[in-house]
Amino acid sequence: MDTIKKAKLDMDILEQITKNIEDNYRPVNIKLTSYEQEQEDHAIISYEELVNNSKTSVRYDESYEIEDEINVKKVNLSDQLSNTMRQPKLEVTLMSYEKEEAFLKALRQLQSDLLR
Image 1 (cartoon, rainbow, N blue to C red):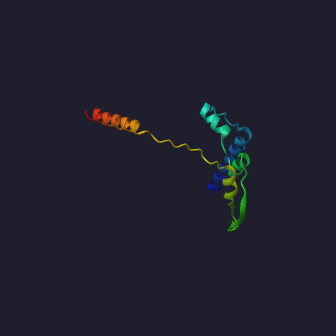
Image 2 (tube, one colour; image 1 turned 180 degrees about the horizontal axis):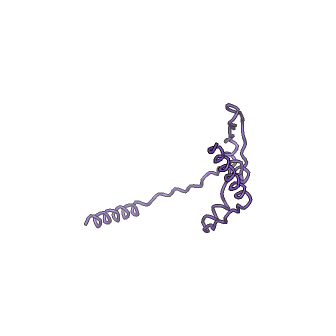
Image 3 (cartoon, rainbow, N blue to C red; image 1 turned 120 degrees about the horizontal axis):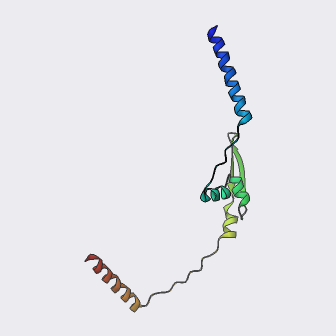
């Protein structure tokens, strides 16, 4: 009997503590550094938020579920690649023979200076 009374008393105390925490709990404000505040302001929470905030739209070809839990979507990349990729503008110029010889001479001089 003594054990049962002690268990009931412990339960009463636990319930009082729980009620006190629920009634009086106030979250503490955390002081963030400027870096932490910037990360908090610009954090991406989920894939949906990333897609919604992106400047390009994502198009899906297919959507299906695996084991009634995971929703899988096939992304259509052909539309995005054709719309967003720009052809790079490359200008290729060849070095003159004299400049190439001067460059190689400077490299040899540098190599000999480093070995000393």
